[in-house]
Amino acid sequence: MSVLERIKKIDWEEYSGSPWYKPEDVSPALMKLATLSDTGEANCVGHMVLSTIGNDHAGTYYPAIQAALDIIIAIAEQADNQISKMCALGILDDLISFEPDIEGYSKISAEQLDSWVYKKLRKYEQ
Image 1 (tube, rainbow, N blue to C red):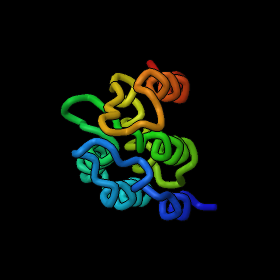
Image 2 (cartoon, one colour; image 1 turned 90 degrees about the horizontal axis):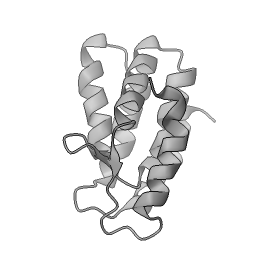
Image 3 (tube, rainbow, N blue to C red; image 1 turned 60 degrees about the horizontal axis):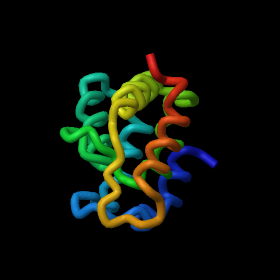
Image 4 (cartoon, rainbow, N blue to C red; image 1 turned 60 degrees about the vertical axis):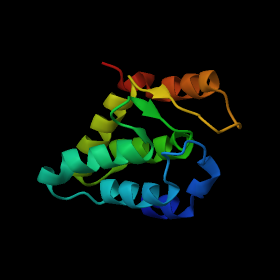
């Protein structure tokens, strides 16, 4: 299954919690990342992705990272498009310093989510 198909199959509503999380924005942001072709748009798309799966300014991520992180990693490691790949790596680099924001979400604790994310990202730590 392609990355684009994987993005479309995810029920982003499943990760609702924080009042700032907008599930309807996640899929379009990840689609833009996967199909990014203009270097000039990379910063904007990176910020867009970080802002849909978390709060880019506060340095936090929402529970949706449980599904989004595997997509971002797949783009970073497998994308044919170098611009998408580099943007995804930049997002992963930023996420290393982020912390969980699970306000209103009861399926996982902040500590569990933080540990899960850390394990996934540790190979991208520099």
